[in-house]
Length: 360
Image (cartoon, rainbow, N blue to C red; front, side, top):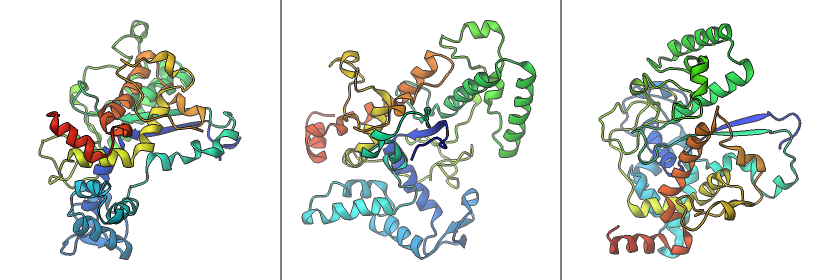
């Protein structure tokens, strides 16, 4: 519960729920020992050495058999099973249970259950004063990699300036600290928020423009710690796609989702998308701010009984442009799945069949 002893602020990473599912499925396949696995076996650890160590236990063996045998090492098989209405829905219900058995399977709604539900209405806004979201998303038309690290930089920049102002001595100490951390974790040429922390007044004057208060000189050399699900680049398959390592990439044999699989997952994660929508819009002024022609029109209804602090998800940043970029990424998650999230269009099979008939 939220009370006087709770943290003043909560920072949450939000990734598109479907992308997160596919990433988790692939990562569990990589981490769990297969029957003929020649890697060193153990019950825990080894995430940083996935090329030579795998995890196994009696419980993990059941998960491994489920992923490799039942769902043929293909996240799309599990995804489509979520819509299977044969055998009185038995396969569909089994698939829903199996979703919860897979590691890293907790939904966003489950993670934030203390901020949504009937119990929230009696919780005052004091206690948790700030709720900030750092999205991991690659919106259409943006760079070909997620903006996650830039969002982190912007958030750190805002927090550092809020606490320390523009004192150059403080900036130098912070930069040394970041340099030591960067050297330890091996992030290469990646710039930290400390590099952006101190700017002269001419830079400050431009903070409300496209510059967004962050240097862009070396943006092309920055590395992202997350894989791009649509990338065809040959990559190392031995690292965790959910980790913060710059070597973290997807398994090479990954398959894409079918339209039916994507729709089934969108419906399964409907509450997660509703929660993301809740972070974006204030229910009280939604109708006056968005008309039917809006590209950001609300597809999944906003969750009722949500703590009002959720609407501060993108309130961080040095200027309006920072906040816009955060909102843009959250909106992109909704818009990419919009045609599947509208349950009024009927079942997923009907929606997909309609797309096929229309050449979509």
